[in-house]
Length: 109
Length: 104
Image (cartoon, rainbow over all chains, first blue to last red; front, side, top):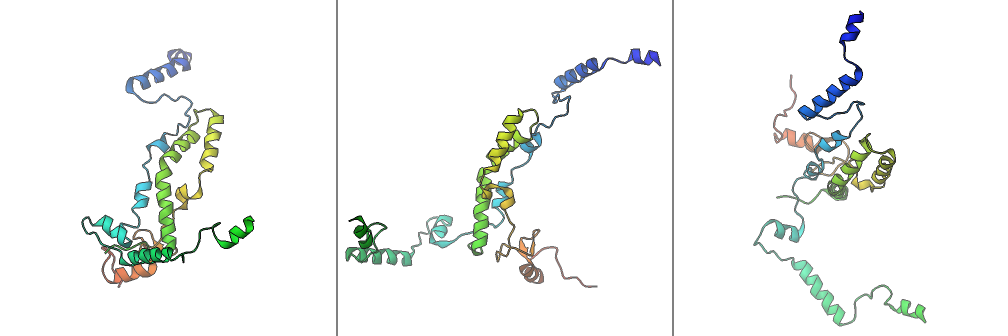
């Protein structure tokens, strides 16, 4: 079998051949078979499908207005609330902000 | 008529979904470094720690498929996105294509 050993090229030459082959055909040369993480990069992103799970949802007047252009619906309850708040503020009946009340000013002294 | 999300837990889940979607690309980049054996081990460990430091809501495992009609967390058929009761109602009404009551 000695003639067979002579006929076979050395491992280094075989490796050189593999390298050349990968260069010619544009494949990755990875003789130690290391994990390159390309699987992670190639995988599709899952986020968009995750966002689609519940379907399109519209909530509130603002959502309706955003979904249907030129509808211009008004949230009358919210408008009333804001007007009431303004009148109460004018009369000084609005709850003070934190640190602005009577107790907070007492502590400072 | 499209409805709002069913229940506060579904709302919480949707918030997590948005968070996962927005952080996915960055997480992938770190994961690529972690899984890449050709990179310096120190860098890989640092990337692993960065990945672990992300909030819980940015991980895909934080996502739970809840019932799209009731927001129920358990007994949900993932193929239809419905809980067992809603699935039965929809299937009985013939709203789900290819599903019929067994009879033999």
